Amino acid sequence: MGPLSVNELISENTNLFLAFIIGIGFGFVLEQSGFSSSRKLAGVFYGYDTVVLKVFFTAAITAMLGLLFFSLFGWVDLNLVYINPTYLTSSIIGGIIMGVGFILGGYCPGTSFCGASIGKIDAFVFIGGLFLGVLIFGLGYNIWSGMYLAKFLGSPKISQTLGLSDGVFAFLLIIVALAMFRVAEWAEMKFPREEY
Amino acid sequence: METKKTKYLNPYVGGVLLGLVLLAANFVSGRGLGASGAIKSVVVTTFNTIAPSASEKSGFVKEFRQSHQGNPMKTWLVFEMTGVLVGGFLSGAFAGRLKLKVEHSPKITSKKRLLLALAGGALFGFGSQLGRGCTSGSALSGMAVLSLGGFITMMAIFGTAYAMAYFFRKNWI
Image (cartoon, rainbow over all chains, first blue to last red; front, side, top):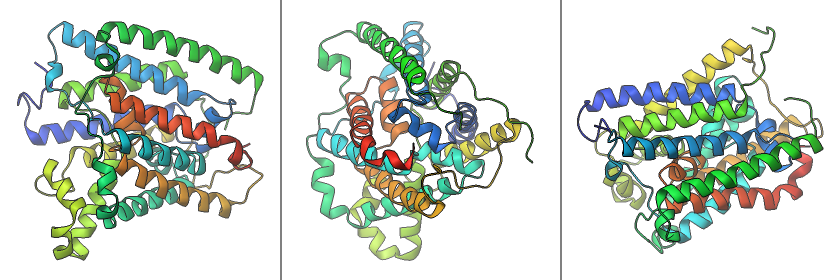
């Protein structure tokens, strides 16, 4: 059955319309969770507000389990679902650069749109920065394309790499997440701040 | 528009709801959520408009075209991110949080906050291209489909931000 658009059960235009609807859900949940506030987001790095960690890992686990169950029930063919490819060098260096951007700017791209949607001027400026960063990457593409394309490993699953079944890996990830949530709750008690 | 502010959603409830949105994206379209890809569409469109002949030769645009035929603005992520603006606005309106302001720690000026936001945005934009997606597209969506690269990017983003947090603490606390 699923994915609907890959199996051509819905047209391309319907797919784009549903992307818009999914985006509304995405933006609404981000804003309701407080992801429109850079000070709230940055709290995860100082322990006073760990909403990012809780929402992020709960979401990843919910979707991961959902996909595993959907696959089990035959509702979605996981072979047709896009798995992000792994380019070892660029995923590490890109992640490091994004990490610095996160602590400086307080937003990530998705949350900056969310902040801008309720009028945060710093979020608009962050989006301007995003545009600039992508532009610089595009203009100098030949300079860093070697690094961009280095160490391509295909699209492996982390479970395969670790020699575990998907289910066992998912179970271990849930245990790790629960441990992190416990630390997060402790940190919020230890470093209390007013709500931003 | 300033009415009584409502509190934020419980983060675990928010996480489950966000996970269901991500699950819906995978079920409907066979792909995860994203954000930086929409910016890429705008940059490619800008290239095509300002310098069409240079754009034809650009490795960056060629790479984009391999996965996106036709109008670069008619992509899944552009429609999704337009939805994000609408969804965020609706949520802010219901919660009484619509307000034009620069949010910053009382220890820094608005100007400093805006300069940091610009610098952070530029780094995030650049890094998201190198990392083939940002926190949404690479880390969150990648993790949901168990992508090795998704987990690596997630650890690199959060690990670096934690490692640097001490040096930038005055901007936030």
